[in-house]
Figure 1: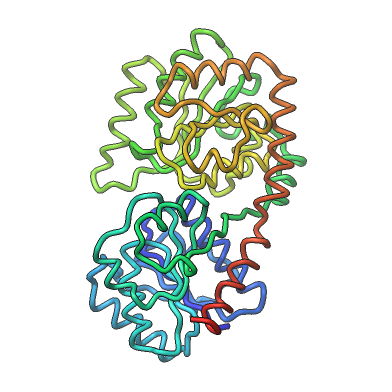
Figure 2 (figure 1 turned 135 degrees about the vertical axis):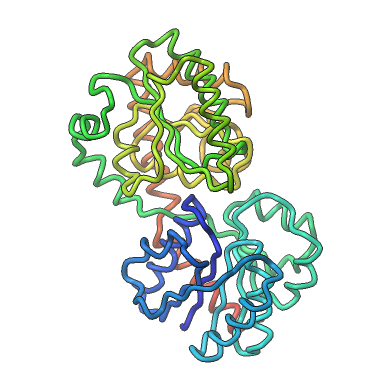
Length: 371
């Protein structure tokens, strides 16, 4: 198949990791894959096996970017694209316009978030062939809105290259990693990964860190992620919270990691403090790395973690409960080992990358034959 993947993402996160893995996986399976990105997208550097001529830059400013929509239409025509696959809400209307300009091409969208779609989408996406939801929670929200025929909505859970995370863990030199990043070699490391936004609950994590520090002196904390907001207001607020709680010596902050598998392998506990999570790709990556997970009970996390079996769930925005769960694990190495092993088995069985790619291929085939 000749497939065009579209995203205007301007920062790296879980949805972008999904996009990169899908594009590269489809290419690996022999499809002719093209990628349309916004100017200056950080995704370009991560695409590896995708030929440079197949990676296209467009403005992709917003849902009403007519110039980008027309440019997409020309790309679809010139490259004889069969499947147009858009991944962000602001990209759906331009992608739909491109499909209307080329009647043989079929439009597929992936919905990565739980937020309701707008009235604009109801009109603009009347020609959508299939809608992929990354979790049952997302599919449920889509069905409630009744913007699409129920038979067009399909669930394909995100997938990861679990074996890569497992291999990294098995061959990991924690002391060397800690030395390189100036982390305490003999300390207990608690970390979280995700874009710096209010929604990800980083300030809740920091407040929990303050409570943990009073109980577990060896504990140190890592926050990995970037603030994509224009004025970096989320990062500024997070910095103030860390300073007010006198945690500047206990909380280490990093931007995007080129090899997140190494970071997960270094952790004693991984934390997802999100207020809303449609799936939780970082949770699954940590699970594959055999790291015990403490996560807020978002809809996505509840589909991934079975309480007490392969992780711990705590109430959303409850720093005290979060701290208590983390302390319980830091003080019990055997429980960390048990949960980590169970988590890895769950990630390996249920969230494989090849399964996700195969299911997406099948959606494309259905779109071409049954739309």
